Image 1 (cartoon, chains in turn brown, blue):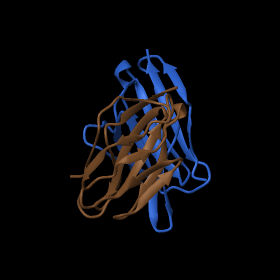
Image 2 (cartoon, chains in turn yellow, brown):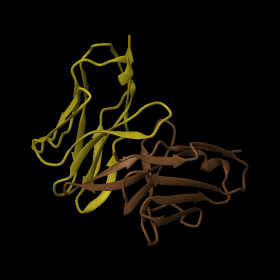
Image 3 (tube, one colour):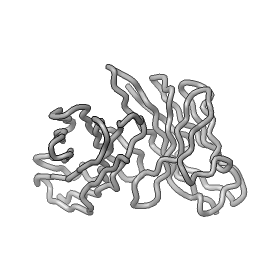
Image 4 (cartoon, helix red, strand yellow):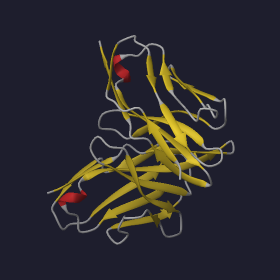
Amino acid sequence: GNSVTQMEGPVTLSEEAFLTINCTYTATGYPSLFWYVQYPGEGLQLLLKATKADDKGSNKGFEATYRKETTSFHLEKGSVQVSDSAVYFCALSGGGSEKLVFGKGTKLTVNP
Amino acid sequence: GAVVSQHPSRVICKSGTSVKIECRSLDFQATTMFWYRQFPKQSLMLMATSNEGSKATYEQGVEKDKFLINHASLTLSTLTVTSAHPEDSSFYICSASRWAGGQETQYFGPGTRLLVL
């Protein structure tokens, strides 16, 4: 079945540091890949997505590239801000199912 | 666009009572809505898939008689936790599917925190 593995946190960075959160997946066919962000006490917000190989999703300075050869969708940001502190979830859908399969989430804390 | 709301945002109830949570897609029609449960510091667990006008499809291990789902219109789905007990205390999140440009994306509500005393 489909599955998502993302790096375990928590991750603590200083403001303006470079961020990478690794995400790899296992899926049949050609899934769509997503990154969702959850701020404290809130629901999930779609951060970015990619629907086919080599697509790059980007939003708010975050980027992730759909790498089929390595089955990865790593999240990156060149310079994080305190306001980026949140939990980030990698997810996929596909293989004939519209259901989303989530990774366990990575908590990011950015200190001033 | 693609805003999903949930009501209430927080509810406290006594053990044995029932609680209804509403999920609405405000600016689009959603033929499919999903209900998730999230335990502290954990990922989302899909409870059920709700299709407008038909019975919900529950995930394995989710009691359909305890978690009643109704999807009466293209913009509203409700989850009723019947005879709630303290172990049902959790964060419940809904999402609604939107098709655009030949692609489907789920948009999530802000969640409902349920505390059963």
